[in-house]
Length: 234
Image 1 (spheres, rainbow, N blue to C red):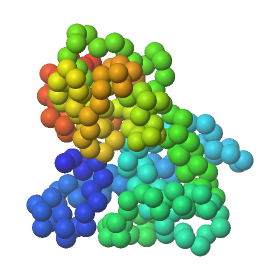
Image 2 (image 1 turned 60 degrees about the vertical axis):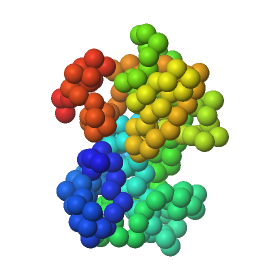
Image 3 (image 1 turned 135 degrees about the vertical axis):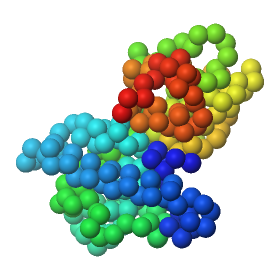
Image 4 (image 1 turned 120 degrees about the vertical axis):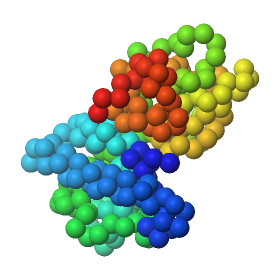
């Protein structure tokens, strides 16, 4: 597990006991960076009345849905009685897995006005609900074998199980001909689908910046990343 890409939900003690302390600290540092990025995005995109469009997407593209959700949910839970955070956002945060022992400290919360944070969270949730890849951002895979391809799920076909945009990117580890087996880039969880459940292969130029690191964490070699058109230059 790469803590730079995926959130470590273990406490420091638990991680040390499993020999994963380095992963814990990687994730911890990345959480801090994400919180700082949220604060910076709010400061740069607030015009005095509203947050400009694309504010939350900018952070999600950099850190991925899972970490942004985790950091936002953690911050909401520190403000349970603050009326400037909407009840819908508080209910949303309760659905996100945030262990009690996260390693965060008070000075590492998002240091923004709660009302502005509430606006950012609404925008981030909207991005989950509407920020799907659009036609022109995928292509037909070359050849029949989908193994080693970064695919896009047709959410319209699987919305009952995977309703939001974070689930759309799927890396195929095995193509049996009848079944496509692989992992979600969102959280590295495994699943299997039929070939018809996919729109196509994501064009490399349309991949968010964090994707090459995630693919490398899944075992993709530099040569495979190059074959997919992915660049490891950040």
